[in-house]
Image (cartoon, rainbow, N blue to C red; front, side, top):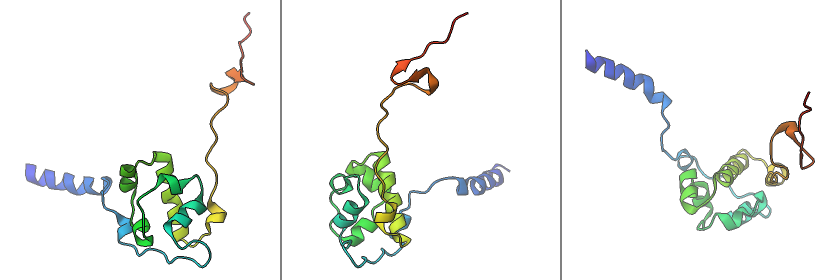
Length: 129
């Protein structure tokens, strides 16, 4: 009885778990496009955010496209940078030009606090009755 229950539970939970398989390794890398994007450094420079200095150790075009988030984490990229580089790689795979989809990072907040309690750098106090 317990074996059948365990088998049913295994079947029901298997699709809900994440696998650590590099799915990008199974897909062929996109062809370098005519123009200035023919090397990994040129691609990282085209997407901006100084990605070419953050992601080092990528020598060939195939090595860039077989890199996954775990390898980028081991290379020392922050979560935000990893997500941006992987997102940009997928957009490039789909045929878009980096000049169209690349955008600068979100700037730091200048005013701390949340909502209307802080406006123009000054804390607002409610009126007391």
